[in-house]
Length: 151
Image 1 (cartoon, rainbow, N blue to C red):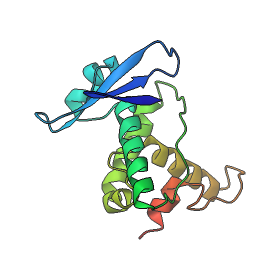
Image 2: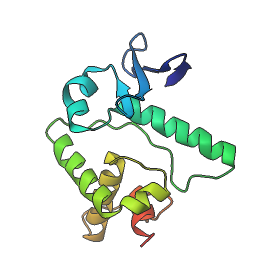
Image 3: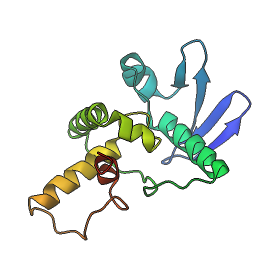
Image 4: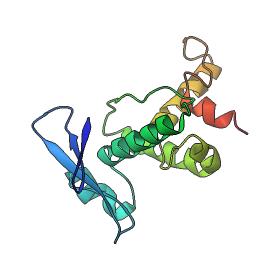
């Protein structure tokens, strides 16, 4: 949850609503910045966004799409917790998929590697191998398929 402020956005912590992080676009750096520790100590030097920046970017894109009258093809993102051990692998898959499908990502207004795409990719792979019994996956309920089906 975030709120527009004079010089950027306040993004409230999901765990502690009393904690808020400041997200803003830096014209000097030509990128979004956040004052959360994850961004400052882990992601900034790598050129990556934290979840607070991604939340603001997604919110802005959603508002822009609503103003233009277009509808998103994929379902709304939800927050998911993964172990610290598995996060690097999921992020690596997300980066690889973003490199392979950059144009398709951008068509869906996804401007940075998405862990959701990586997780959806793993669901598709497991389903195709018969290792997962889930309802039929398609581009309406799986973001990876929405991207891959554009080929």
